Image (cartoon, rainbow, N blue to C red; front, side, top):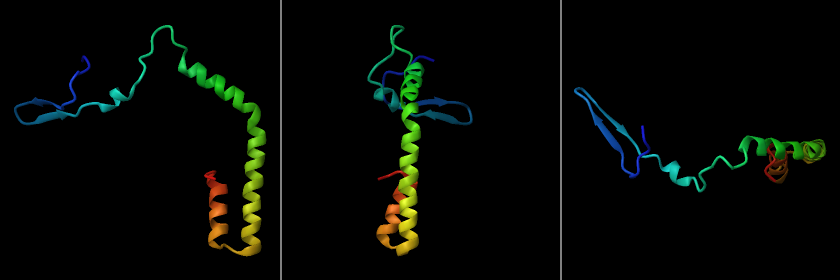
Length: 95
């Protein structure tokens, strides 16, 4: 099926039912249509991961230290609002 150019839903009517197909607005989110000359996005992602992998151990160590510090603070001071936030952020990597 060829892509639709309008942004309205299509309706196919049958004897006992209708099928309504909504428009596909995600197609408008694509800002670049890849050509044969473009670099493979999977290869580009794998190259980026290879660069990050050398830093992963240091990052993981820092995150574990941060989580342990938050855990120790919670044990020492109790689970106050601030400590709870600190522990949650350390566990979920939000902060």
